Amino acid sequence: MQDTILVLEDGTVFKGRGFFVENEIFGEVVFNTSMTGYEEAFTDPSYAGQILVMTYPLIGNYGFHKRHWESGTTQIRGLVLKEPYFFSTRGRRFGRYLKETKLTCLAGVDTRALTLRIRDRGTMKGMIVPAGTGLGIGEIVEKIGQKPHPDTDNLVAGVSCEKMIVHGNGKTKRVVLIDCGVKKSIIRNLQRYATVIQVPYNTDFDAISDEKPDGVVISNGPGNPEHSEVIATTVKTVKKILDKFPVLGICLGHQILSLALGFKTYKMKFGHRGSNHGVKELSSNRIYITSQNHGYAIEVKDVPDVKISWMNVNDNTIEGIRHERLRVSSVQFHPEAGPGPYDTTFLFQDFLNA
Image (cartoon, rainbow, N blue to C red; front, top):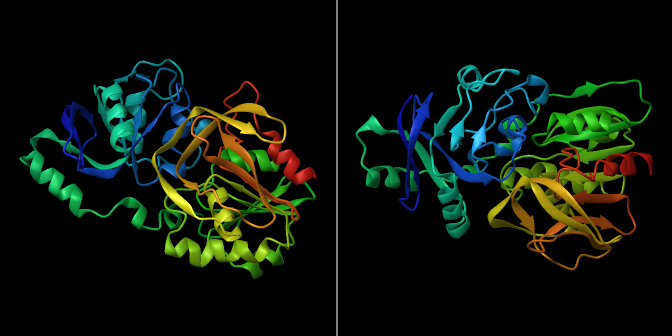
């Protein structure tokens, strides 16, 4: 444990106690409003490139269990929280988790003030720095300003699988999952209805077609959906499969599908990250509480044969679309996450049993 600071690109400084701070940690600073689910959040590939602030003050109180991980490793670059709980009697204790995963953690921070700063100014680049580096705040701010935003990298390439993986379960139906940084819980939900063929994000149309799938799912993932490499690979492939197979997009997959259909995306001020986001299904006027993790959204636009199917009740951003002629749809939220009490996991069944 050592004195450590978080410096935002606007020069704001937050002091705390650092755990496993061996080097400076740079990333986009974002906040998550969930009261539970920290195990899933830390291992969600959609957080690649980001320093995560947990707004709920106490983290680690029910331990860490690998069965809850959404990938094989921790995906966030750094963690900022108010109070770590090191004494859980269930699963791995917090300290052991930090040590084993080599996750840099800054604790003792006024996360309420930090979150309000991000809500006011928007998500910013930031850096976790040991206090004894000898660098002045101005020097750190200058260093942050010189670093490109993490989204300028193709973050999807870093979290996608490198080769095809078949998740067999004896089901006759087959679904190709385009892996842009997929969560394990999405694979588990799909396996309830079909054999899942997980393929890299840059898999071409011919390779997908050769699998003769009953449907194609585009997964969640990190970064800018309009990154040039994603446009040249995933979006290009999705354009070709739209009228060939049923397609479902989730989170980043929703944005990629929307781009393929003719929409545009934009970066949100501070995004949606948490398990308490209300969305309305327009066909039924029902409200569902959903889990979300995204910093981009699609712009409202008239696209032939495409209807908006879900809307966010807080800011009216688009949460889902569907094609009127083709079996093509997508949602911005995470139907696999199940925040309750009335969840949207039925979307997997609707997609594969239609």
